[in-house]
Amino acid sequence: MPYVETRRACQSCICYKAHSHPTLSIGAVDAGQSVFASAFTDEVTIQKGSLVVIPAHIEHSCNPVPHQHWSYQMLHIDATWLEQLSSEVHALLLEKMPMPQLKPFVLHDSVAYHAFCQMNQTLFDSHVLIAEKEHTLIECLTQLLFPYIDWQQLPQHVYFYQHLQRLMTLCHQAQGFLSLQQLAEKIGVSRYVIIRLFKANLGLTPHLFQINLKIHQARQILKTGAKISTLATDLGFSDQSHFHKVFKAHTGVTPKQYQQGFSRTFLQ
Image (cartoon, rainbow, N blue to C red; front, side, top):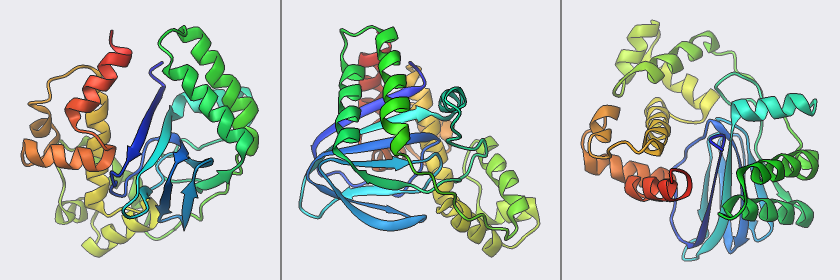
């Protein structure tokens, strides 16, 4: 099931940098308290039984209350697969544009929370066949979660907006990291315009956007079983230590731990 990734964290105190995912992400709090923050919504304290629905490309962070641990589940669903499912149930869930379109929100509903937990338990069960897991995922999303989702469109900024897609494409195609000066010269605008474009539309600075992009690329490469030793250089990081530090700040685990966990679950 390459279109879905799910994980659990138990009694964690790990904090995450502000980041985004190219997937629809649904988080469930099992214990403790955390603060959900995003450039596109107010800060919200979440606790046991809370569900957080984060549309694709939304900048966010979710960190435990200081000096406390928390437990949670996190599900990531591929945007293309989700778009197909949404068309089958005649419900528009996301746009194809690779940038924020919809607001994140927090849901406090025991029925939705328990439905999510039961579905995730099935996905984690190594004795359940793939066909049954897919059936459970589709049924839960369409019958138990989608009805609770209240999508709200984000306001679209017009400030030099026509340049944003090209800037994002340049970042995707670059082997390393592009400086503000390089981005400004390629587009023909000032460095300030570049910063404002990214912050207003993506919630991240140009540099943080590129780091976030590289981490997503690293996750996909690690899933193939590729060697970690050359990954930092291939992605444009200064050295292996810097790559490991940034990867853990965004995912909560080291590249090796991520690859090992994925290998145990999917590559056998």
